[in-house]
Amino acid sequence: VKNEYRNRQVRQEHEKKISEELIDRFDVNKENVDKNNFNQHLETELNKLDVDLKTIFYLRFREDMSIKEIAEIVNCPEGTIKSRLFYLSKQLSRKLSYYYILK
Image 1 (tube, helix red, strand yellow):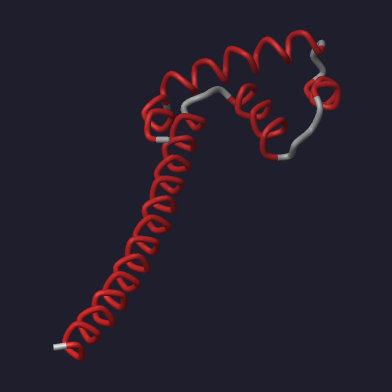
Image 2 (cartoon, one colour):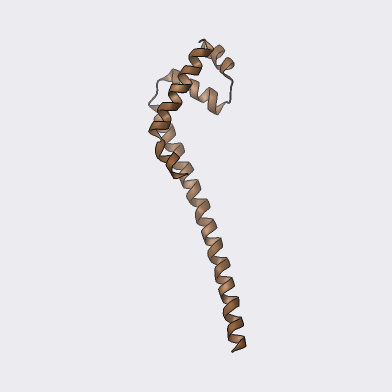
């Protein structure tokens, strides 16, 4: 009887460890899928924008440029760049709000 209880305990610990590993793998894959879906939807929404807004978005968030640098490149005042980024961020957050709820 002692051996049977010991064997059961070992099996239960082993099964628990395996199930935890599977759950961890599933969570990582789910997170990657969500990121991929988000990036695809973001690209779709960015492609709907006019070229100026898309350029400003890429320079700011993909190239990590400052407002001043973007203003020099686009040949616009800094205030205009800030305003466009604000309204663009607001517009994108509305269209992609589904992904904010998931986290």
